[in-house]
Image (cartoon, rainbow, N blue to C red; front, side):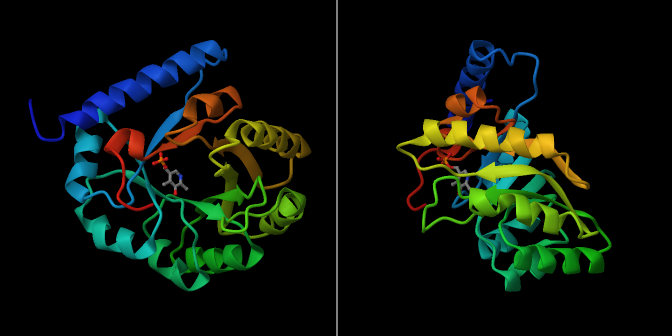
Length: 231
Ligand SMILES: *Cc1c(COP(=O)(O)O)cnc(C)c1O
């Protein structure tokens, strides 16, 4: 069917093609790598088109207000929160998101744990790592990561499922490499209650490289939906 959103099918086909090529190139052909659709600024009917036509199963949300205004309008999909999260906003999202990928402090984790307990759920989370130490970005520094993980391992209503990062655009490859090393190091520590099954990295500009360095969830916005007016 020809619709005004057919460009999304074309974009999605190209992403899957590139992803499969990268998997082959880096000897990961048999592995599952999830494609998250990052929905910031994108209207719900466009997101729903990607869900129904491309089979997108995971949405990535950056902003609490925007998410709350759109969530009732979305077709069924798993929602992961991926933006900087203030502690006072946690209560608005815990009941409806499947994963919070941007946890970077004990304070935030405690708040999530508290609201998850009230909601009678175990909240899946990823710990965000600020791999290049950039001021403007969220994420725990690599130096403080292990200690934070030990602290989070004691909280009974959150479950750490892996790590997430947003490397700098211009030196992405070096930092994707560093991130893979950290992910492997942490996995080998086998911390109680800490599950290292997800490495969420790779965006429109670097997802093929992220596949090289072990990502198993790529987060795609503009390559799927087109350029955004603002970030
Ligand atoms: C916006 C965003 C993305 C997607 O960025 P694109 O370059 O448009 O693919 C991925 N992850 C996070 C955390 C984002 O904020």
